[in-house]
Length: 409
Image 1 (tube, helix red, strand yellow):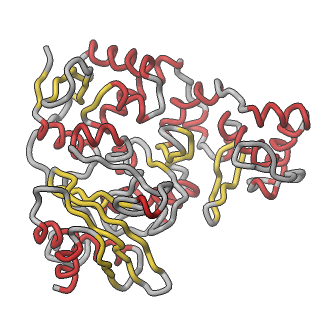
Image 2 (tube, rainbow, N blue to C red):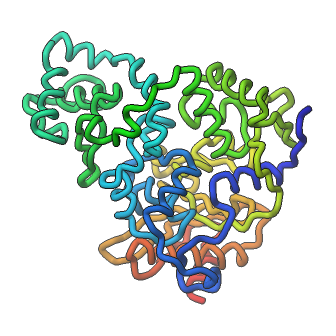
Image 3 (cartoon, one colour):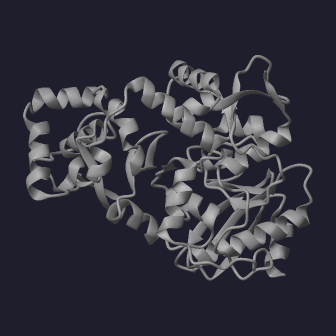
């Protein structure tokens, strides 16, 4: 039997699955949450990443690099250095290709080994093999003998070549070994990757466990995707770990047959679309979410899914010419209660110590002043987290007048 859920149920399941349904641990001294003032620890970050399943890494640094933001959205004010500590000193998470380049809990390393082993080389790698037959092996030997290295520190790295982002030979070789699992990321400095032998990065208790089959790995990825999503379609769940629809469906069907997940019908979703939901601890109680979300937050990176669940059309406009942008360069959706109610284009002006709101738009049907009050409090907390002194607001957008008043008040 199919379980029938309302659109409101779907929203609540999606928000709760991502750990966005409650007040955060550490907040500003605002009226929003004087309830709980706690120092966020590395263990809090680890638990949050476990719940999300993965954390997408992105280089854009308009306000803060994207992978730091989802933890602020869920936990509140924390020291960003804790994420680096978790990844590169405690080695509780590791970098790999999942949805995209992501941090993943280290205990799930075994799920990616078959994928790594089956990587197919890009044309630029094949060209490197022909032009410099021994170079790939030489790179491994250099890292083994010299310790972790950036691509530019590799001897014989050479000039930029090929179509793979114009990488140098050293970068092409290092990234190939990284995708294959021979090398892992031991550290980052100023966002530059430092490659090391995987055996020196992944703790032995996680590296030398039995490697599951491709089918079993895919099935477990789908279980984790359903847990992290709460609700979605075959493509939604496959997208979470970059699995093709047919592979995702095999795993989801097996999980449904054994009763680990359930098939559902959601109000307003197209007829015939296969949807699944987590089975354990389904709670349809209201949520108390309030968070600004980076474009690469797991709740919103799948644009089709958030349109289906939240009736919120969203796209990132970084690559859209400025004159054609509707909302702005790097726009954060604003989650309040159980809806995506607004969107703001933000920039950290570090020279002036200001979090700049370049534009602010509220969705149709919401009270401008009410939304602005909550958004202003969130922005002030974000500024404090980033070490900025104040929030400055421009004039673009239908929410800006109310927001400016709320920031002053």
